[in-house]
Length: 283
Image (cartoon, rainbow, N blue to C red; front, side, top):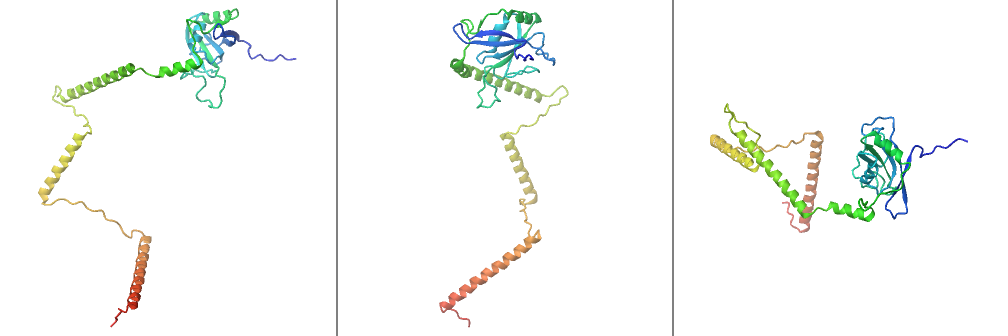
């Protein structure tokens, strides 16, 4: 008989409970991150690979759990294992990836890469996990919020206080006023002549005053031309080309013949009406 491959071979199991009174125990599978591809963001001698991270566990909780074995440089949480650079998650509190089918609920479990500052911390962590007892994630000092409370907290964080909005508006207006004053000061400095007497000419802005000045200049020019020639210049009307194509000439002839026929029928009708009224006098 051949031995079957154990999917948990090489992993160490970390027992985690949500609270002290919880009956359910979650198992986090951890091992040293080791791949053929060298990635500076996740060095193999200092990185711990974690699987089966519960949906309610935040990366700060994961950092606190592994911080006791040594200083943690970074914690990267991902929806799928990766061998390349760390994938930045837009929201560490998201339960499911944004690209997933909305009708596919999934399980919400994640993966994590814990990067230690020193490689000795990684070795101490892997050694201590053999004798590690159950770890409580949510304590009185470090409470983990989940469920409806977590959703309420996320919603409340999106609502800004009135004073914060006013402060943001005031800061924006102060910055805007400073920029406008600085721009005005630079324009005044450019209008002043330099040591050699030159003045820098900038591009004229298109505003209403510029448009009005332009209209007045055109009126003055028109008056000068009128006084010189004795009459006002008239605009040439655009001429329409007729019978430019051969089919236009043919269709024009057909229309004229049709009009003549209609007029002939109308004349015949008038004559017949006059005969009926006995008013027709040919001689």
